[in-house]
Length: 219
Length: 219
DNA sequence: CAGATCGGTGACGCGCCGTCAACTTCCTAA
DNA sequence: TTAGGAAGTTGACGGCGCGTCACCGATCTG
Image 1: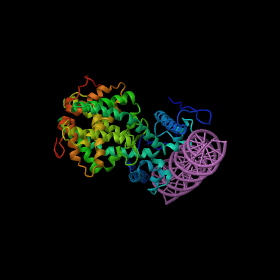
Image 2 (image 1 turned 90 degrees about the horizontal axis):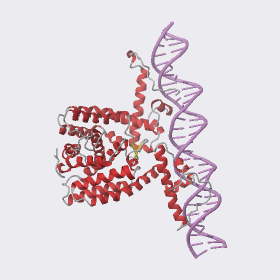
Image 3 (image 1 turned 180 degrees about the vertical axis):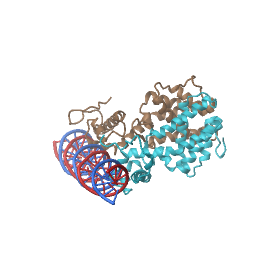
Image 4 (image 1 turned 90 degrees about the vertical axis):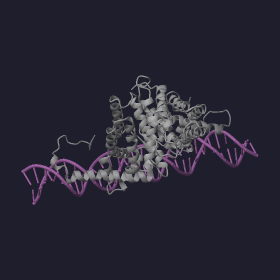
């Protein structure tokens, strides 16, 4: 109520988008986010304090609160940051699909590859090595779920899918994607391709069409 | 069952049946667990303090730590308590199965009915209305997952299932069950039967065999 | 019934949280 | 170029929840 730092002026001269002050602010926010990623990964969410995060930066404790209101908020900001990276990839992959097979396959393919290759921190979106499972209803993450449901509905409208309950189908895809990611994360050698083939076959033909153990190709 | 209200006298509890000291201990543990359920449900996990829980009982603050080490531990004890109720139901349901159809159908049927009817708090196992998703690797919950995987492996051995990756299939079932539960929890009128039919059809025949909208699932 | 043991009690010290008044740095306009 | 203001940083401080522990009453044992 005193100073709401989230009050960007409505009209902003685009000339000085990169003033030193604005630049430092962006930097500091990123510094805190990066430090948070490191510290959370090291000690887990529960054992981490706001002070721990700040101690991993050259900033003072009060500065943290110019950017985030709490430990939870910085965690959610991390999730959002990740969601913003993977969402366009998923969207693009699904847009190319012209069949159910491609739609499902592209979704799992993209997700599992991102989780295992690019985005180690995606695992932390759902699975925190320490103690907690954080809320998944941050704006960007929810937007990702909504996009998936929208794409399903569009596909139904185009006759690509049968007219099923898009909400449940979305939930099923999300549930399988995240839960299998967690299992993958615990395997010595995790193969995103094999996992994607498994999930794709399951959604397309059910259990009886799953790749048999030992095979690598099922879709 | 319990009065989680303020009990006036700071004197001794008046229980007197069999083995007084041991009995009181059991009672106190249960009193704390019940109070925790109430307070967590009311204010959510994040906003609840250990003192809040204790204040909802006639006990003193120090007593809490004779039974649980932290807020998280009492939460996990709640999960375990719930897991101990639903696990035998699931086990029994799956044991009767003589086909893949029955195995899958019984699993989802039992789970969704329990979530919606008997066990409102089961939703809190995976979805806390407030802030957190708590760890799902408490002993009893993990045991439930293991039992599912064992049952799948047994079914494969009996030739009931094709020889698929039991670990991934377990993960897929768990993921769909919990994620669909969350969606159900947000629907105005949730029908466990329809949800179970949806999930069962998905696992047995894939997307193309799903019930069409209007048949039993609405959104 | 007396001594031993167990568990309850609640005040206490500690550490973390979020704030805020003072200070420093950057921006803007004359 | 520079003065005044705006924006951002700093770190100490009050408040609070946590977990402990010395004390005590109640229960058990012989």
